Image (spheres, rainbow, N blue to C red):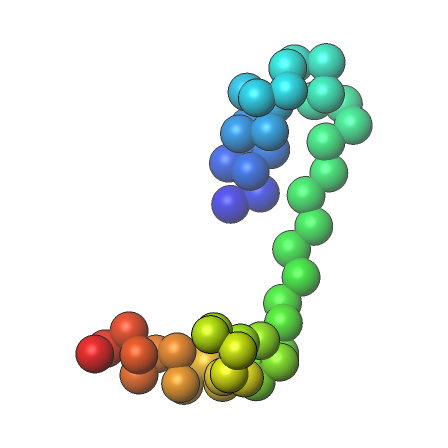
Length: 51
């Protein structure tokens, strides 16, 4: 994922950006994010995906 995000940014902005491109992955704890204004856990999202 890090490589793909880096390459996408460089493809858009140009090769000169490669030496200063940084990608940081930050995990958000379950229940601290929302869909449609409602706080959800990972289990809630999995249930929605399952239908």
